[in-house]
Length: 186
Image 1 (cartoon, rainbow, N blue to C red):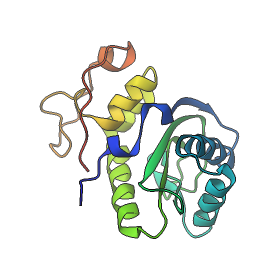
Image 2 (image 1 turned 60 degrees about the horizontal axis):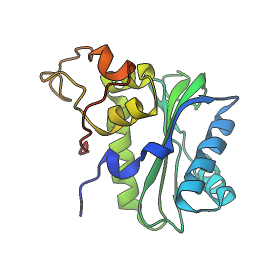
Image 3 (image 1 turned 90 degrees about the horizontal axis):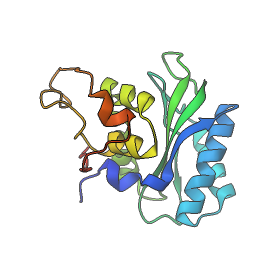
Image 4 (image 1 turned 30 degrees about the vertical axis):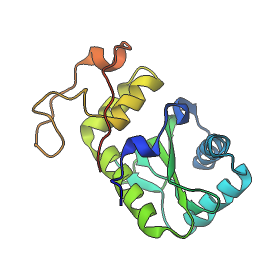
């Protein structure tokens, strides 16, 4: 079983740097459209699968993040779409905070273990306070992709799990200067 990485879930073309949102349903519809286009799927089928999943669980994970997700026939591997929302929308998070960061995750139907591994990967990444802060301040889709898929922007003593929370160099994320991107193993 190959390790799950954020880079295996998200591609630069599936990042929406600023999604003007009217409601959680609007967010899901817009992200579903992007996923359907990228994976040559029926956008209505994608939206229906997410809506059915939403009837049984909440997509709000807290700390301003939402992860709408579903299992879908026709997929060969999990795929994600990331969006920064404006304004933040209510996804029924346990902490009551509206979400301004959303990651749509679709996985192949019938492969629950892969879906759970992919979901855990996304949750771990988005719940990292420094990652969330950088996603909120990143200048463009390229910077968002780097924050989602790599740790090259972190200070050497600021790796996940070290207890450090140094602020990343602002220039690396906000002025377009980018480092080489490496996969983040989950």
